Image 1 (cartoon, rainbow, N blue to C red):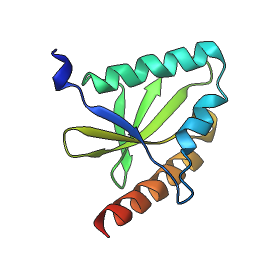
Image 2: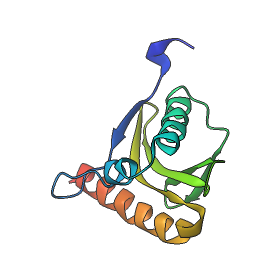
Image 3: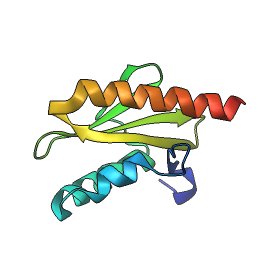
Image 4: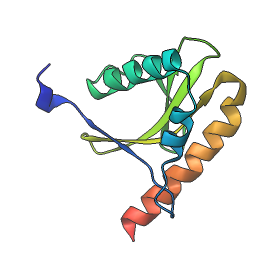
Length: 112
């Protein structure tokens, strides 16, 4: 795959300009952060084999490591992925609801 075929990965920012995904990622240990980074690279290259829809336009990327890490994102067209949240299998339902709220907020801001 050519580099220019990659999608760009951006982070959702709340109204104060903070990235909830970056805050979550910053709390990971080095090995978990490396696994998540590898997953993000795969997404950027178009490998969505571990991705499923969780409703309301939000997608979940599952990482089979440790407590079952998850990355939640939305897609804006064919070129951008917006990272909304990260979490684990244990908090999956709450993380999905939060990601859905953030995605709705992102879309509302983009429309307005």
